[in-house]
Image 1 (cartoon, rainbow, N blue to C red):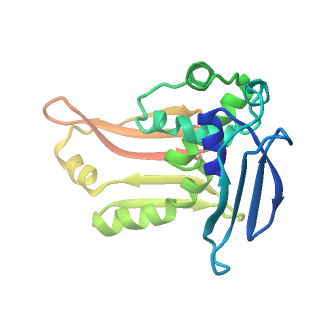
Image 2: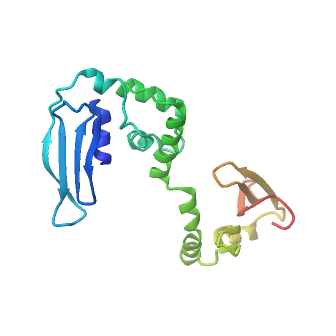
Length: 225
């Protein structure tokens, strides 16, 4: 279905679902008098659909197809613009989405829909923050397994959410032996979906270069954390 929605946006037409189930789809143009239609069904009751019939000829007027675009959902728009977020240094705002979708596809998109599309697109490329945080125990295990001597700590609450996360790589621990006996701890607010503070402990080596010793994610910058 998502493939047909993307096609509808690219080719500038609209369709509606006449009949759908777990095993078959029947799509029609929004104009009941139009000849365009699409039928598909599963193959041997598997999760694979085969096109049974497809009439790609629109006999409706241009107004029915161009005035609005019901298939341009935030999810479809996200699939169109997701490549813009592959490079984390690339800044691509909701306003950029509005401008590009209008320029490339002739579709007017509201700011809220563009903002939702941006969030979905970023999740497609980078994963959701919720799912990423769930991977922390595995990540810490692999850090210690592949970097013997590395120290990680994960303090969880009763509901399974973590309160503190701490990492110090073995290379940093070993490097401390050759640094000046001075340590500076600083913090910065996390401004993503889940708030908190990231703390870093740094020192200075004999060449005057900054060496990060450890970093941690805490709920706030206080004596307990």
